[in-house]
Image (tube, rainbow, N blue to C red; front, side):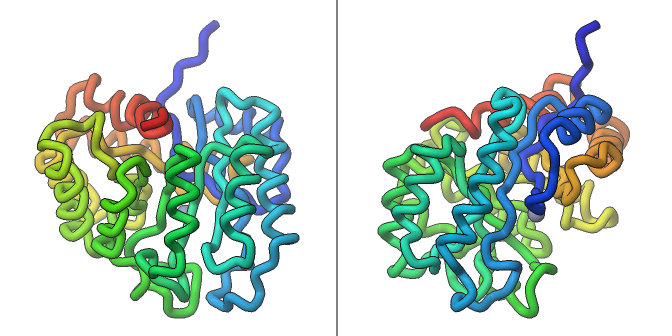
Length: 280
Ligand SMILES: [Zn+2]
């Protein structure tokens, strides 16, 4: 019997302890076709650049690469990178070219995404032709990093037109700012030209339930459904319930509160991720 997939998930965290077979089993149980799996955070979730080490980064990306190897059609590994790390440009290249990871994840914490000193890294990522998922919005994982994560700080990526990126959490609580930033990128290539725009929105929760349907409705009305990508923020990918909870909740919003067609739901839950991952 062919499995029925409800979702592909663009936002899954690894801790560096998971077993690939158990991850795929959880995906099957929850009806998840594909996941973007982030390598473990290379800085132990601190804002202190002094703690970053190339050795630790390598360990983290090798872990993600090994899990990806188990089923590369369904597990898409992204390298969680801190641009302040010494050798970030060379390590970024190695993660993609040697370890075959498919993109990057970043959380600005102690650094701003648009800083001049990171230009070589973004130039490298543009030449590698892979996408980036950025944390955006209020940040819970660090002492006081939210101030680094406002959506409009990513406008500088307009200077790297071949980089595709997604801002996570619809930028909560800066939802309108996140939508305006996506609109700015869409306008740059001609409104409606969704296959050429750089910016997608990773709708991974962050928006509390009270704000969530309104945020999703605004996003769909303003941008259309083609730039929104489902994500769960599952921090234990061996647990099917962590996927299922978000899938069930978002499907209820889409069907019962927003009255979306099954084609629109299918785009957000699965197909838009394919477009995001395809090279620009
Ligand atoms: Zn996350």
